[in-house]
Amino acid sequence: MRTRLGLLAGAVVCLIGVHACANINEADKNKKAAQTQGKYYVELTDDVERVEGTCKFMRQINAIEDPVRIPSKAETPDYFREKAAYYGADTVLLRGQVGDLYICGHVGLNPDGTRQAPYPTPVPN
Image (cartoon, rainbow, N blue to C red; front, side):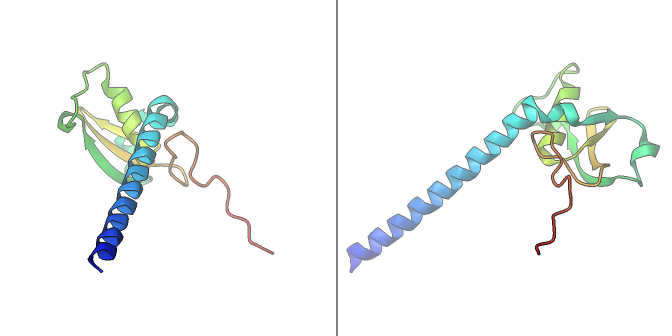
């Protein structure tokens, strides 16, 4: 009885580990797509009047608080573009080292730069 219970617990732990590994691999794939493709579809702007009130706010990113590496001044535009593509935003409102991510289109972006739902889903017959 103890052996079966131990095997069952071991199997559950293995399944959880496989699921976590799959999620990490998917996140790495999305980050790579945002770095290589998606950042070219993101617009950087400092025009507050055009963005605020007309676009949907997603989140705010502070480049100084990056836990891995703080980007230099030359790397900051690409840094914000990559983060915006990863999170699905198509516009970044720049305020120094802080960027506000917005969706100004109808839907957000996928990490590879394509729209999340470019066409409405067809109604089944």
